[in-house]
Length: 361
Image (cartoon, one colour):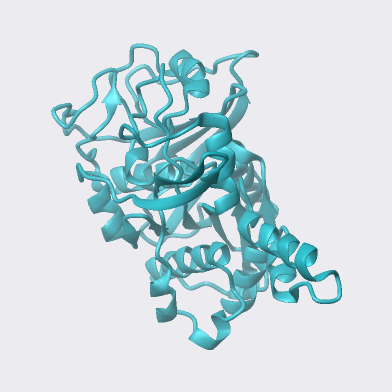
């Protein structure tokens, strides 16, 4: 089934909204800020990509946000921006489904709840932390505060969370369970994640995030949310693009045939363990690009890749990529010929992959 993308909402280290995101895709500098990681060697300052959710107050009254944590606020802001961006289509919110894809989930709030339980006992542990730590909390906040009463689901399959969520959205639309699906990926940086990163990878950020330096570790943790308003093909409002295929698998089983001359938006985000699998797909292709230095490394950053792909198709030309394979750097440009389709590729450390094919027509 062909699925239509009507609206995009996005928030990350670059700011919020399509304009800020578009600018970030061509900007040389990246917007990281320091975080303090508590290691066995004491406090250490490291860079990370952090998101500001202040603009959410344009959509949700401040009083309604008192018990909404940062993770859910990112999802709420991106979801609200996506609905605003799709304002040309009429949406019956009783027929609007919600699917949130996440790798880390509400890790920060879950950790805070456990701390409150350990420090004060079960009688005095925080009910607010508890309610925000449950798996579907962010999706529930979106449903309640945006008054969307269709089916509501959270999908967590680490790097493949977004492709898995898309497959579910397609089934909902095929089965006429909903008219539209508000689908997005969201992940949050937190202190416990920073500690885990330090234990696995040591110090990071000594060099910039370089997605196609596949032999070394250059990943820098990030956070953010990217949401899409999706429908079946019968909707006739001017769309960004269409999702025509979603494939998942493992490189050890097979590498599916890909277009020889097509454009690939690659989710390589500086993890050395993923380098071998990415190379199996990309090979010597010169039309593979990555925009991950604009938003950082986290499990659902392929939602940002998909947003970049949708913008490329709507513009009918590529952004001049800062990182292209096999040559990296701002001097690498692609001809501005018409681009009818592209593929967004994400591979994890175990060789599992997700490929989302977008088409302009």
